[in-house]
Image (cartoon, rainbow, N blue to C red; front, top):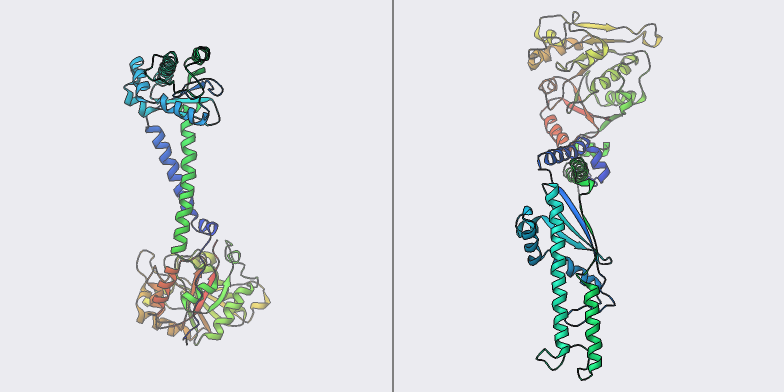
Length: 482
C-alpha cells in the first residue's frame, strides 16, 4: 500500500531530556529572573514590616455576649475579631490617634490582621517606609481595637442587664433558661454578667508590642526575592524547554535521522573518537571509520567524494581525515582536499600552513603538484604500499574562493582523477556556505555529516538542499556531539 514504510511518530521528550537539550535556556532564564529581582529590590523604596501579637481572651466557658448567647465556635470568634481589628471604626480611631500613618484608607492598604483558627493569638501587621511609622501604626490599631472591643462588650452587657432588670419594653429577656418571674434567678444572672464583663474587659489577655523582624531589612529582602525569582525562573525555563522540545524535535538517534533525511546511515561516530586535539597518523583508525570507508566503497560509483556537514560542526574534519587514513591503509592512492575555505579544519589538524591549495589549482594559478603535500607516516610497514596526499584550501582567505566557479572546479577534478584512486573533499557546511553546493555538482558522491541533536528543521532543509545537487548522495554519518 505504501511506497515506503511509514515512520513511527517520535515520542514526546521528557522534562529532564528537554532541560538538558536547552541547557543555555535553563541557565539564562533563571539568571534573568534573579537580575530582575535584584534590580526590583534595589529600586523599590526601603520598607519596614512591623508585627504585633495580641493574645485574645478565650471566651469559651464564660458568659460573653453575642445577643445573649455564649460563644462556642472559637474559630468563628477569632476570625470575627481579626475582621473587626481592620474595620472602618477601628482604623479611623487609629488614624486619629496616630496621624503619622496617614488616613484610615492608608492603614487599610498597608495593614492587616489575621488569626489562626486553633490559636488565641491575633497578628496585626503594618508595612511602611519608616520604622517608627510601621511600629506606631500597629500599636495604634491594637489600642483602637481594645477600646472599641471594650465599648462593644460594655454595650452588650448593658443591654443584657437592661433586659433582665425590666428596662426593656419586651416582657421576655430573650435569654434561654431565664424566667423573669424569679427575682433571685435574675439577680444571680445579672451578677454573672457583671463579673464576666469585669473579667473579660477589652477581650485581650496580653499584647506583645510591635516589632520589626530582622527579615524586613534590605539584605533579607534581597535574599528572599532572589531565591523566589530563581525558583520561578527555573520553573519557567523548564516549562519553556519542555514546550520547545515538543514543538522542535531533534535527531537523538539514527532511526529518526534516517527517516527524516531519507538516506541510509553509512556509519556512526562517537564523540570520544573525534574529540582529541591531535590525530595519531600511525595508529590504526577505529572500527567506526573502517565501517564508513567500507560502506562508501560499496555504494560509490566513481572516485571523488564530498564530505559536508549539514550545519556548523566542531569535529567534521576528524571524520574525513580518519576515513582517508583507512582508505590509504587499504592500499589506495588517496588525495585529501581541504575545501573548507573558512574553517580550514583539515589543514589545522595536520599542520599544513597557508600555502598554495585547491583554490589556486582551480583558478589555474598553480599546478596540482605545487599544491600537494605527501604525508609521511614514519617506518610503519603497513603504509609502504599506500600513500596519503593533502591539498589545502589555498587562495586568499579574505576573498571568495575560486572553486565557486563550477566549470573550473570540475575541470580541476577531472585532471586530479588521473593521479589518484580516491579523492576525499572536506567541504564547508551545506546550509551556511555555498562551497559545498558547488562541489556537489562536480563530485561522484556526497556524504552528509549529521551531529546528534540536530533539529528536524535543519535536517529537512538539508534534505531539500541535497535534492538540488547533481551528484548522488551516498548517505550520512551520524556524529555524536558533546
